[in-house]
Length: 267
View 1: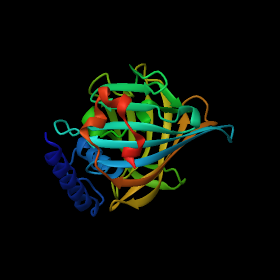
View 2: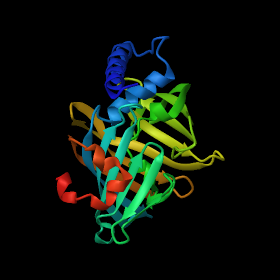
View 3: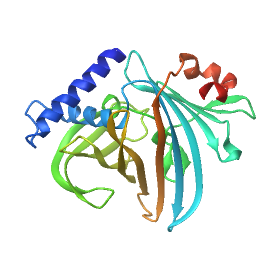
View 4: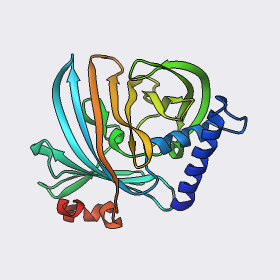
């Protein structure tokens, strides 16, 4: 599937679901995979973009760490899945470090050593946020979705929402989570909540998507609250800002280019 055809399909799905939601019931032909793709279109723009992501870690209500990242994402022309280059902006000790996700490969580059090493998307980045959590991903391309229930669920603002509860099973072993329970608002396809599980089906974390704001013509979540699966007082908040369409050159997404990446080029 080309990026253009993938984008057209996302737009068609969004229109289809908007019509379906007017009657508050899904048409028999609307599949769980369609619902997931429509939710992806809420979270992710339909072409290359950049944004800033600030992560703040809390323990027992007290902030203990933070980090700011600049993210550049471009959809693969063959698969439709996003490829990501992530630049560490702060704290100063991490400034200039890079993460590159190209296909199923994830690389970490440290300018002090001029070396890049392959890392896991499951590896912790900050607090409860793993490397894979800050990557732009179309879940419908990496997971098989099935409908578990239609139910009311409490959102991140502690309001009840009529939702579809989907069960997502990984299509391959290179994803961050083996299984996800994913709640989608029945009225507008917005993501509400997710529970992420390990390969042994242990709950790792729960996430709430909130602070929806108009960005690039769509109401998108600008804040994700991640709560540890064992310790509910260990919380990481991810806030996105400055979302904008931008060119992301193919060269930026190549491992060999990492030592030559110049942050000034990204401004």
